[in-house]
Picture 1 (tube, rainbow, N blue to C red):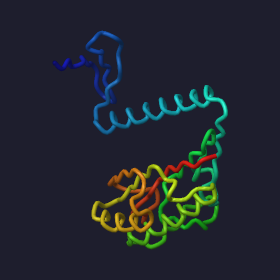
Picture 2: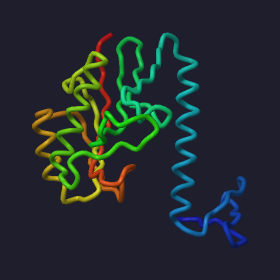
Picture 3: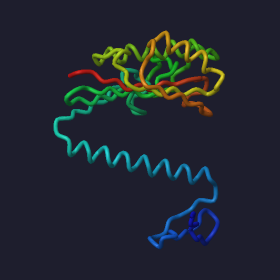
Picture 4: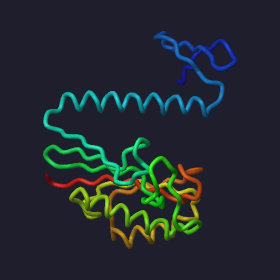
Length: 194
């Protein structure tokens, strides 16, 4: 049996009473805003949990790196977590020209060519992992984001060339990426012995 909450109000949101009588929450008039609110809440909860876990777990060393000047102050390109082993988290890597100057959006290489953008991204991924004592063979998980499902064959071919079988993989089709002209972005997690 589904029990619907009772809601009142309008405009930007409604106040809803939990059907089990345990508090109230705000409902948003558009599903996109509701989804966004859920994502934001989940992100905050994950950050709080990670910070708490980091405080409770002794011996972990978290370091952040930005080899490309243009990414400094925007996001970390690489994060390593060292304990019994070292986990390396790469931010999404695409065909952004890594030699772009600081404080500027990087130009995109290989405009309109998903296969070549993918090859360039994997070349950067290999070099980023190598700088931290890892290789693609150490990758345990990757997420590939593309802006068109028709790129799947090109990306699959590129991925096979880079890895062979490769790590656990998630393939997502999204509306757009951070910089116009980007057709794909790949984030990778790798683990190496300490």
